[in-house]
Image (cartoon, rainbow, N blue to C red; front, side, top):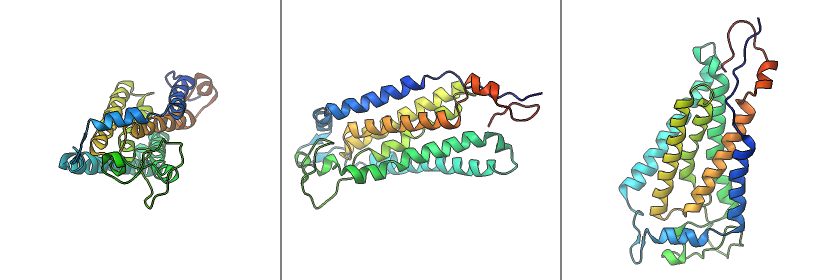
Length: 246
């Protein structure tokens, strides 16, 4: 008897890739700078700086400790994937764990090379916020500076938004838990984004770009590694007896 392949729940890849890509194109055509500045101004006090710049909670707890917690999740995912390569109970989840490791790794590792490529300065480095750098639109040429900018896209936000991978990992087998993972990832990403905005480390659009990048990465990896359409499921077999749940 042929084994069954788990069929994925319906997912409109064209729509859920077109929406973020369209939003990216819109932000390239329409500079979000004025809105960014207006939002950051809410957290800036002339002569004193950003209200969260030296906050113990925002820096030590919401930034450092929270990032370490996400790193622990990533390490556990790697350990689980390595164990799935051995004859353990985790072997049936090998593909899912591999997806989680890959998607989270791509989400978080994309930030550093993009920061080096774009050379965008942080709000706290800009002249209107007590710094010495000139604010320029993202696609504009940067004026000469002795300090390179490293603030686009938002790095800390990627720690939260990378957990979007949990949603796609779980959606086909545990949809209720997957919805909880989606809410968790979006909530953490937004909290991390607002916290860094309050500190003057990023404009809000920097973190919105991070969300869009991470969503697209998770969707594409899901399509390549985990998604099983009804047609693919009927054509594939994995031996005799039990369904494939890897």
